[in-house]
Image (cartoon, rainbow, N blue to C red; front, side):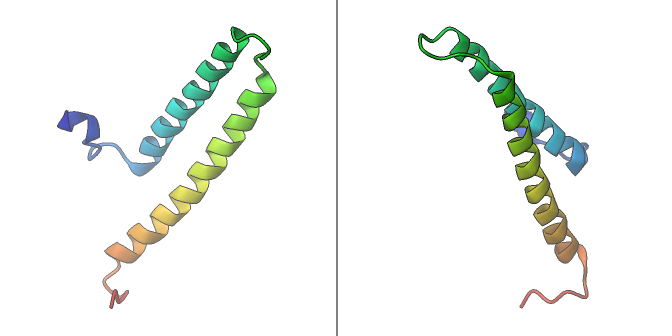
Length: 80
């Protein structure tokens, strides 16, 4: 189980891309599911909106991650 969470050899950009691909896959699966639910329909527009939301969220999180990592690794930044 530990190997599932061991990301050391993978850089942070790859990690965020993997998360984004998984999230987009869930969005696509949800649209396929909706196609079979009475009264609902699948929409490519919903998948595109999911993609935009996922991209925006990952961008914001990545920017904060970089800022936090930079401050943590910079010995001139005081944490007190």
